[in-house]
Length: 238
Image (tube, rainbow, N blue to C red):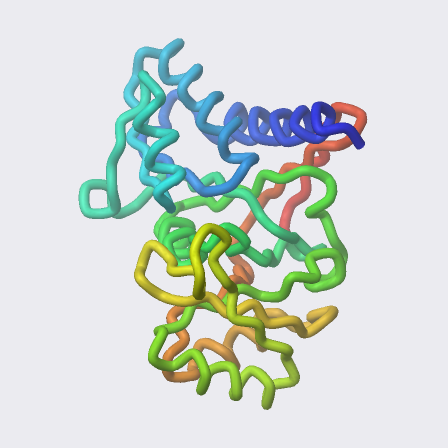
């Protein structure tokens, strides 16, 4: 599939989600991270400009913050000013049949989960490649796990005991590990197909040193997947 068609699929999914879930009554929006969210912000800005009603947007990352700031009709906000959001629109690295997600390929999983949790509705937007039956089947880079740097070796050993294969994520433009917006490290842990993502999350989150996992379970209610032919598939949680 060409880059142009793939970007079109992302754009169609983003526009469909914004058009359905951002209405005249929407005031507070969580803005996720990633390439598909770029198109969501574009559409949010168009709607805010057309309605001349302010949309207060809470970012999940530095990237999202920059997108909101660059949009001339969106208002940059935070959870202190807007503790309960009308909707959060975010991407996904992989989404299973129950709309459980793996997120964190961009390193922003903790902020993304906080914003999604504090939203009345969490809506996923992605292209067709992210639509899967079982987590870990298509996304083979592992489950991102944000960890306190002091504990990364100990956490890696616990991941191995749980049957996973941990890899400390390294930075691309500098020597050494990637450092998140929170000053943490990320371990990408591969379990292959994940039959019970909620149980795996619970096993990981209790490990001292784990800040958050990239398993978003029972959070998304609707997902929009842009297709290669220009259509959009809308799925709801079972």
